[in-house]
Length: 91
Image (tube, rainbow, N blue to C red; front, side, top):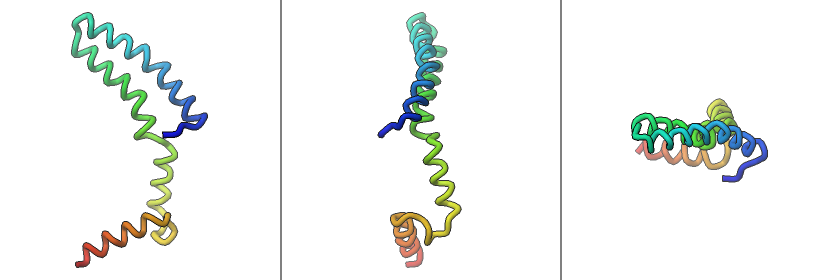
């Protein structure tokens, strides 16, 4: 995945908050509080992973616009896939 300048700034901002939380989670794990440490570690990982892979604003906007456009105006690969699905459903 290639990151642009704004993506890198967003990743850095996520890491600013996620790294101290992950550090605290590891301290809690070593202190014997497994549930709290594991839960906080999951939250810290989610703070970095979710915005990068699932909540990409450009991808969400692209999918929204592609859903609003008629089939003829969408990119070249999507109609062919949709037509092949339609053909198999008709048979």
